[in-house]
Image 1: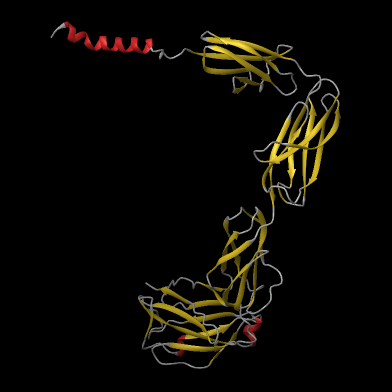
Image 2: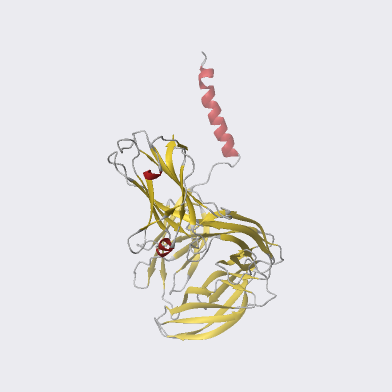
Length: 456
């Protein structure tokens, strides 16, 4: 192999480097610039802001701000800190590390603006909005300054709306507030409020709402049939078809079928929408026997402009306790039920079906199972009374129709069903599964409850 071939790659690299250099593509040198900020007594100033050609850094606990990767050149800088006079100037960067010391003089008078609070942060056109801020004199002399209020829609030039003179001694702090009625014709949406002194300023956003038109649609009720002590969720879509950003209270009503709404049961306050925007409201409420009786209810979701309606069916419920575990095969099984949400005076009959389940699904015939194998007891304040068992139907299913009398009414519908072991030795079989169904004998409602106990 010739020497020319060996040196060819090296020569090629050198050629490329020379070409790049000749075209002016050599990357410029970069340097580190460090500012040390002190006060007149040579104390290090923390949290001073240093701006170098648009780049901003804060000084650390040692009063130092670092700028890295700074190219050679001439730069303007500005150093500032609350309560001190600003320092500006130019510096030339031409070394690896550039250290620059800046001393700040305390201002005779410096009015710091802080803690701006706007109340309310969301306001309707025609209502009043207030901006309040604290002003502190960080200077070493008493001074008087004009404090100004500016506002404007977001992104637009601020307009001066109000002003007030304020006098503060050195180190003194006071609050100042401005209140303005929002004009009806003002542009709706985000607005900026700024309170300024001659030295400082602070700004915050607030929202102005106007008149909209809120259409209500797609009412959804889950579930459409609910028992006492269960929860129901009502949701609806709300669309602003008006011409301005607006907000409204969205209200939920529930009244007996055909009744007139009087007062909302829940309210979604200040629901805000942009022009053409659609949102969803959702209400979840527990149905309690203290407030609701079984029946059909009209459900209404309403805005100021529109409403959507639906219906929910409320049924009475059975609150039950699981039977105690079977510890021996002669133990009785006791099912406890509390009948909730029914007018016991108006309705007094329930059907109780007690028997044995085949694979926990269907009641199964037992030859030795008879009416003596179960009893129904009504718990009242005096310790209990027997219910009337009116009839039994066929041998396969043992069914008792129970009339709930005065004792049950006094006890608030608390029922106990006791089931004895049934075989010839008055024992349970290990494979037995026992269940209970309760059905309300009423033209309007059928409430069923089933519980099973596996005796394996």
